[in-house]
Length: 118
Image (tube, rainbow, N blue to C red; front, side, top):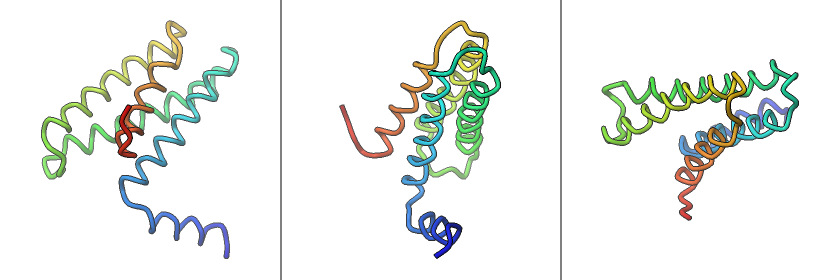
């Protein structure tokens, strides 16, 4: 079986919630890796920050759609988090803070998607 066929089969077998968890995992790993890089690796660090910001922006856009099935309060919370992530990403990009807050937010979302509670 080719790699592409495997990828296609695996995405068909996972639920939307599982796909979101997987995507958050990939983005969060990229942020964790970027956090370990020297600040001179600006482009690589920015790639991870940009990927995370685009993920949150996409979620906010989906939540602003009136046809979205999530409860209004949840949609509003996701949009609010997205706005915070966007602002905080700029702070991290300027070197005024580290990646920890962004990583922690994503991990919290992943816990919710997996059904785990602390």
